[in-house]
Image 1 (spheres, rainbow, N blue to C red):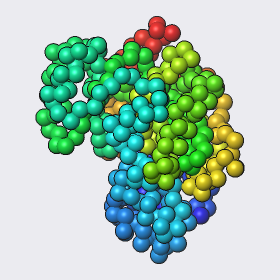
Image 2 (cartoon, helix red, strand yellow):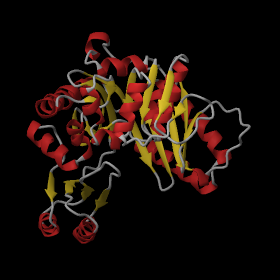
Image 3 (cartoon, helix red, strand yellow):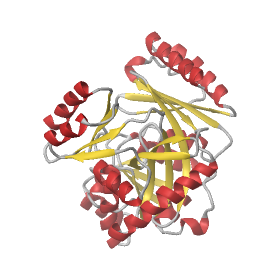
Image 4 (cartoon, rainbow, N blue to C red):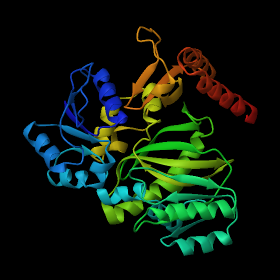
Length: 389
C-alpha cells in the first residue's frame, strides 16, 4: 500500500518505522525534510500545512491512505478537503479537533455533558480573572486556552503567586482566554482511545513522571481497570463523540484524556488530539495488533464492525526521555532498547514481562550513558514513587 504520513514530528517517524516493520511491502512517504537513514520512508520536501501541495501529491502519486500526525494540517482542514476529494484519510475534521486544541471549548463541553472535571473559570480579561481568584480555593492551576503549539499549565499555591501568574498569562496574549481550575492532588493518568466518530476502542493508559531534565513514561497503567475504561467510555467518550457529530460531522482519530482517578470515580482535565510526544513509543512497544488495519477501518467508519478490542502484549513498557546533551551514547552498544530522537531529545524504551524488570534493565543502561546528576534524579524519583505505593 502507498501511505502518506502528514507530519514532521517524532511520532510521524515512529509511525513510519512501525508500519514498515509490520509489512515491508508498504511504500511510505512523510512530509519532512529529514532523510531516513534506514529507508523506512521517503522524505518529501512539502510543508505539512501546505494542504494544496499535499493534496496534489496524493492525487498524482495514487496514494492509497493518508495518516495525519500534524496539528497544523488538522486545524487547517486537511480532513475536510480530503473527504470532499474522496481520499481515504485518518484525521479529524478541523471543527471537531477544536475540542482538543482549545481548553475553553473542552471545559464548556464537559460542563454541558456533565463530564466530571475540576471546578473552573474561563476569562478573557485580566481583572475578571483576578476577581475570580480572590474567592478561589487554593491551590489552583492556570492554563492557556489555545494549546495547538504548546500546552502551558502552571500550579499556584496562594493568591500572591497566582496574581503574578495571571498577569504573565495576559501579558503576551492577544484575544486569547485563560482557564483557571481547582487543583486536585492526585497524579494524572493519560488514556488514549481510537475512534471512527461513532464507536471507540481503548488503546492504552499510561503514567508519566516529569523531572527537571527527564520524563518517565510507564505503560500500561495499573491504576486503570477494565471497569474504569468502560466507565470512561460511557460517561465521557461516547457523550463527547455524540455531541461533536451534531456540529462537526464526527471525530475520526485518536483522542487522549488527561484523567485523575480516585477510587471508582474519575475527572477529566484535558483532551488531546493524537499522542503526546512521550506516549506513542510506549504504545508501539507493547502493541500486538495490526495498526494499519485499525487506522484504516477507523477512517472508513467501520471500527466496531471489524474489531472488538485492540490487542496488547503481556509486556510492560518503561521509557525515559531527556535532552541529548545529558547523555553520551556508545554507537557500538548492542543493547536491545527501542530508541527514538528528534533535534533536541532522545527517548529509550524497554519492555519486559514485569514492570520492575523493564525498569531495572533500562536504568542499568542509563547509569552508563547519563550525566550523574540526571541519573541520580531519576533514581530518587523512583524511590519517591515506591514510598507513595
